[in-house]
Amino acid sequence: MKRAFMEGNEAIARGALHAGCQFFAGYPITPATSILTYMLGALPPINGVCLQGEDEISSLGYCLGASMAGMKVMTATSGPGISLCSEQISFAIGCEIPVVIVNVQRLGPSTGSPTKGADGDIQFMRWGNSGGLPSIVLAPTGVSDAYLLTVHAFNLAERYRCPVFIAFNKELALLKESVDLDALFLPPVENRCYANPDIPHLPFKAEKDLPPPFLPVGGETIVRQTSSTHGPDGFITIDPEVISKANDRLKNKLEKYVDRFSIYQLHEHAEADTLIICYGVTARAAKDVVTTLDKDARHVSLLILKTLWPVPEAVIQNAARKVARVLVVEMNLGQYVFEIKRVLKDKPVEFIGKMDGMLISPAQIIAGVGS
Image (cartoon, rainbow, N blue to C red; front, side, top):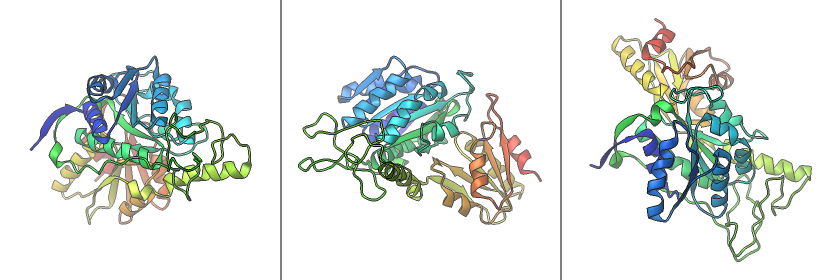
């Protein structure tokens, strides 16, 4: 049995290396810095590249350039850095550039409290780009989960040619746990689909709602790239029909296929009339609640979402079909709860949340469940 005692940030770095990450650029920021320091030691010996950028904006820009050249790339930052990266995120979405972005969230607003955790960026990771087009957001609940979901994140970035966020949290990033690496059910590593270089290349020509096949910038075949609205040939266009089709495809390539990458855990009890929905570090307290209430014959069901965006509506609806009420628990003042209310219009949806730098305790969740 191969076991390792590691912190959450190290698990993300090691998961990235397993997935084939070849390039990392980042700027030091608490509590994400140890991902940068780990990659600084790990990438050069395997002929990879690791850079400390002059800021978060340039770091993500370096990643996008390396990705357009054909490399698998990752950056890591926290809430203030994610705010700075909005334009680069928009570029990656609109130009279909695969990149994994780790957001080790800390307490906000603004620069907030670097040593306190929160889940205050959940909506920002979905809507913090010009145009409002979707990206993928995955949320680990622990150290082994961080390793596993990082591999998934790279696979999804390559498969759908898009940014994929890992919504982490200071409490998980610095948490150390023993991980049984042999027991992790890791998916096969995926690579982006390459176009035939021997025929004329249209860099954004795709079949139906799928991402286009890839050729690297700087190779023998000319590959046009622009951040402006463009047609299949990569040239700038203002044709409404072309723009509409392109934006519809960018939306549909993720939202239509979310059932294929809806990652979650469902602890269902036949006698439960309450479903708790949560994600991230709060799921650890919620699991304790399920165990405690089971001992008292006060049964609840628990849905832990690990795919947050696009919203896995079918998963949520299926989990809630037998219960009378839903309780959403998250470390903010109410963000994902609005998605649950949208999806479950016929159910009473209640909320427990706070954003004060303290974890939500099992006792607070039990109080929300009631007698």
